Image (cartoon, rainbow, N blue to C red):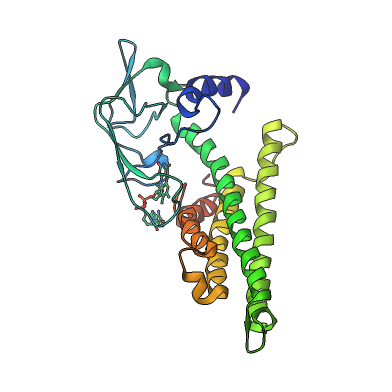
Length: 275
Ligand SMILES: Cc1cc2nc3c(=O)[nH]c(=O)nc-3n(C[C@H](O)[C@H](O)[C@H](O)COP(=O)(O)OP(=O)(O)OC[C@H]3O[C@@H](n4cnc5c(N)ncnc54)[C@H](O)[C@@H]3O)c2cc1C
């Protein structure tokens, strides 16, 4: 994002998103997916798409999938509804089904330029995918560390379970997968930083390396968390155990901001010069 664009984004969005102490409001979300369309955002086709200027207000009123714009919609806007949904994991993050019915917001709630929403969303997703990859790498490492420590202390048959080759191979694979994901995440983050600083001509596709990082790290985190539960045996299945918590939390990473299948489609498009 260029400096000017960032300033507009910051001035428009931050007051809605951040509390006075700089923390993110609990009830703020970035919506880019619709119930009927999923990702990519180019498929969005409900009445949220186009902006019609109407006496200083932006009226959400279109059935066209082009010309997407990004808007801040306050949660107390008339016609906005959020219906909370229960879910498998990520208990700290609220999940809701959101509907907009004839919502109107003031003109200054437009983020950036009219008609740029699709590109803004893509830029967000490029970064977002690397963020998700990093957080899933962290969860996988958390599950791995706990499983390794447990394998050294839990004894069966007169020896620590970590002395059995079957357990060692599991732990070796978990370690290998975390390390490979880490190199992908760092590579993606460094490349995006270098591109933003204008350090060098980037020859790789940023969208591809972001997709690879997310795809690998999230699927790897699911595998590692599952193996960690297995290493803990019955204790791993108990709610009070942290590896059970990781096991439930990591799954969402293969779904949000582009499912694993969507990441594979994206990589395939890059390979065929379609992106
Ligand atoms: C925890 C969580 C948080 C979320 N947070 C947000 C948020 O903040 N904002 C937001 O807007 N959305 C959010 N989402 C929604 C999320 O982005 C969507 O669920 C996701 O993009 C998939 O869309 P969908 O659920 O409509 O599934 P669908 O698109 O219906 O997909 C169903 C299945 O079909 C597969 N599929 C679909 N199309 C293809 C294809 N072309 N090729 C191969 N396979 C395909 C999918 O990979 C999936 O396995 C969140 C979801 C979760 C679970």
